[in-house]
Amino acid sequence: MRIRPCIDIHDGKVKQIVGGSLDDITGADTNYISEHGASFFGRLYKNCKLPGGHIILLNKAGTKEYREDLRAASDAMSEYPQGFMIGGGVTSENAESYIKLGASHVIVTSYVFRDGIIDYDRLNELVGLVGKEHLVLDLSCRKKSSGEGSDYYIVTDRWQKFTDTVLSHETMTKLQEYADEYLIHAVDAEGRKSGIDIELIRLLGSWKGDLPITYAGGVSSFEDLDTIRQLGNDKIDVTIGSALNIFGGDMDFHEVLNYVGNPQ
Image (cartoon, rainbow, N blue to C red; front, side, top):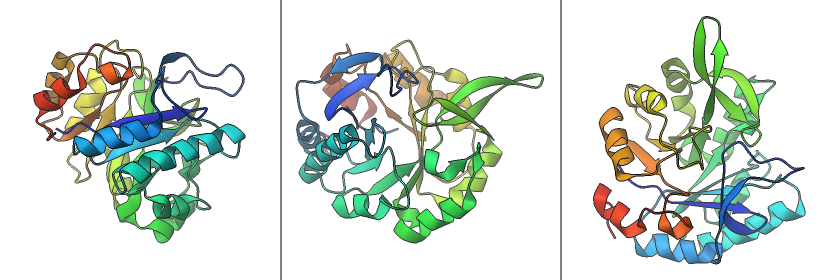
C-alpha cells in the first residue's frame, strides 16, 4: 500500500468537497478551502517523495473557472514535474497538452463513456494520442439497485450521472489493456470522513488483474488503513483527502506516511 496524494482544485483554489455534491448551479458542499495555493502542495509532495498524485480539476471544462483550475494545476506540476496525474475535462483535444505541461498521466472517465456505455473508439483514440502508459481510467462508482440486488455502477460528469456499466472484475479485466492504472472513488463515501466502503474494497482486492488500483473515499482513521491493507491484499493504494490535517482533518499527514511506510 502506498499513499497517493491529491490536489482537488475548484475555482482555482485547493479544496475538499463532498463527493457527488458538485453542480454548475449550486456549486458544491465544501469541507475545506486551503489558504495555500496548489504550488505549496506540489512542493510538499515532492519533498516527501510522493509520486503518482492526482490533480483533479473540478470546474466545467471550457469555463473561466476551469482555466483558473488549470493555471493552479500548472503551478503544482512546475514544482513537481512528472509527479502528478491530471483529470477533469480530459478529451482527445487536450490530453497531449496536459502531458506536455508536465503530467505523468491523464485521468479519464466521462470522455470514454457516451450514452452510458464505453466508447471504445474514443478510448482507442486516447491510447493512440498519449499511449497506454500515460492513461489512467477513473472508474469511480456509486451503488444502485439492479434486478434482484444492487451493484456498483461507474458514474460520470463529476459523479452526477450513472452509466450502464457495472464495476466488476469482468469490466476491469476488459479495460486493463487500455490503461496504466485505475483510480476508483467510492463516491458516496468521498469527502464525508464517515468510513470506507468495505464491500467495494473487498471487490477490488479480490480482482486478479495486473493494473495498480488507487482507492479513495471515506478514509478517516488508521483503522481504515489497516482494513484497506487487509481486504485489499496489500495491493491497493489509497488517497486521503478531508481527513488529513493538511486539509483541515484530524489525521497527521506525516504520521500517515510513517504508518504505511511511504518514504519522506
